[in-house]
Length: 88
Image (cartoon, rainbow, N blue to C red; front, side, top):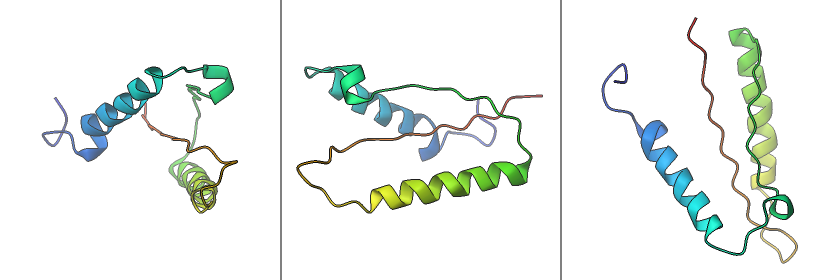
């Protein structure tokens, strides 16, 4: 059970949407390497301030990429992040 009750849009609904996007991708003639599909986990030890700085930098880079206009040379790509603190 989640603290505070039912999971929000940032919970299971988002995970279901992400999985639906992945299932749709897998229904075509896919090539994980060619298409740049990846899953990575990076464990980090950060203070709250370091974490916020990392999140700000990532957000800035992603925001810049989202400004790109569609073209015949650009493929739409989905980048999803899930941040999970470890229980201590």
